[in-house]
Image 1 (cartoon, rainbow, N blue to C red):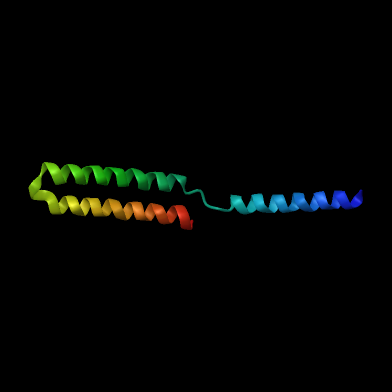
Image 2 (image 1 turned 180 degrees about the vertical axis):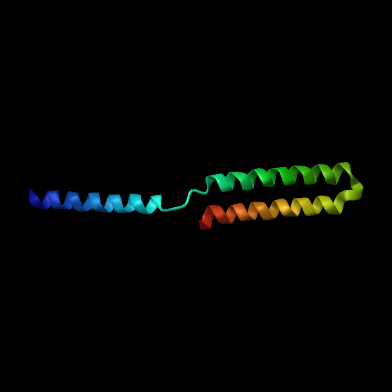
Length: 81
């Protein structure tokens, strides 16, 4: 009976250690949400500029490229932090 209690206590300690480890991960949801919103805005503005103003196509492509950089940054935040 003592062995079972000791095993349960050990499992409880291990479970608590795992919970604490999970809680140490920084909360990046707000940053990811902001980066996604900025990406969507940049993509929309870039597309509108590209098709509505043919003389501003280079600017539109730069805006779209900035949006892509934001999306790549969001990707790294999601998987590396």
